[in-house]
Image 1 (cartoon, rainbow, N blue to C red):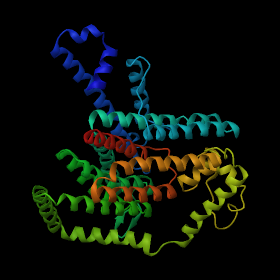
Image 2 (image 1 turned 90 degrees about the vertical axis):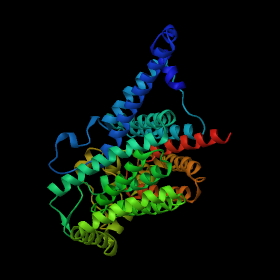
Image 3 (image 1 turned 180 degrees about the vertical axis):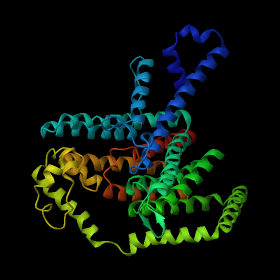
Length: 454
């Protein structure tokens, strides 16, 4: 309420606050509620955009809409939110200190280095402007810390996961309606590893929400999100999402085991288990067919692993190594991977996957790894920045979770493994909030626990 009062004093003259105790309190509540709803809209839309179907005959409102290149709707709302906060506080916004400040500075540092690299490599102007996205992400990280302090850490996690949940339900609906690729009698999730990777991570974040829960709403969203995410991941045709979901299930086991220490919790779980068993029994044939289909997906992705896919993915390391040797100081720019890759010996071997020239001309070609992407694009400074940022975010997560008994330790280890797999197989670890939002939540959990122990 203190922060809400400060904002209120900027928006209205000081004399307004002294007209009456009830009126002053009412105005502060209004300001706090506006802040909460605005934050909720940004967090919900952030989760929403991650798990939408990205292919198929879909209406425009079901596609990830970009207000300008690289800036989505929730990020545009964030920019407006920050502008209002900046004006209402007379040009000053209080930022966190310590490790959180370092993590935010490293995010912005990637943006600054990307701009310098784009200019040095004479990349198109759009590449320079696209680097501004990292400043937005740094601001998002600080804003998430602000929201977690004001409205609670479960508010941030719950709202973000709710957005992912609703979009995942829509994705499943259109998958069964429009998908023309089937395996084991089940359709293939629209978007595959795109939404699949974020849904795999949502299983883990849901278990974390369950660990931090403060009410029935937290519990309901955590459980339902996990069920829907597992249903979607099981038909995603993505090893990455399946591995991350499996790690999330392990975390759930530790969280539930820790909860069983209380009799009241055991009764609730017994009631939920009774309902679930009843639903399965009433739909036994459908359940068996679904499980058989899921087993086909798992067998196809893990038992019959395509060795060629492993070879082609590993070839990206060789390509990136050649680019790094040729451009060690500033890389080739985040949009210059294609132009540099086609000149390497590794790319011209039969082991390499041939990149789409059209995507290359648009600056959207990249290696299948976040770590390799920023190493090739930003050179040795980019490699150092990304590893420092990765370590800083994991340190924030560890500081919040490591003291939460065995369940907290299991959550941190699972997050470490999941983010490592994510960074090695997808290029979006550092240019989305999937790493930064949990790190912001962790910052506030540690701060709250520190205050309670003082």
